[in-house]
Image (cartoon, rainbow, N blue to C red):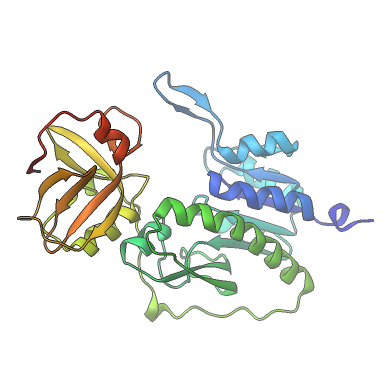
Length: 310
């Protein structure tokens, strides 16, 4: 009898970030069921769409549970009937304590930060916004207070210069899958000692909303660059230009002060904006109502003023 035949694993997740972990988990150990959010209406037609995890589960022929509420008695009974040995949680909802005691071995989460730093919904974003030079992944045992459980594994990674939140998200996805397998093997071995988190070192990483992403050009170029990179591509930093919202998705440091903060100049196929000190050269933007594009492509069709103020 193979380990797949003996082991019951339940996977809980929602977005694309969790998909590689589900795929590798299914390949290595098998997954008895996945738990994800109910299908939601999306797009202009508001057609109902399944989460990325449900789409992958259907492709892999894994049973799917989609409770409206995680405390629902029928759902909890169904989960208990599976008799999971391990529950793996990646990018999912806050769980009620009724779920914690269901697995025979453990319930654990993979979090994209070096806990206790960046506890919360947007650790990748805040890591970039705050100009961190390194980040990591942490697997930990889930307990009632979010992101505070004892640590099982922790891996560190350097952050390349110019990385956006989207770049870091893409880099950490496959690494999270590897850590998922490592953590399951560790739990199955029974030979581990979880490490408690030092709460005094904790930092928050709350969800970021589009209305809070307007750029303040009076800040330093470095701080603005980190902010732009940290919320790119979603929700995206923005400014108002020609009475329309302009998302700025990627920039490069430009070590000259061209004028007063928030003034801009377009020359030599460059779009330069002055900040509180020094300047930034725009690399990728998204004009209101249009798709994201390189600035060089935008400027080919631009016929407006070559200098002005935001």
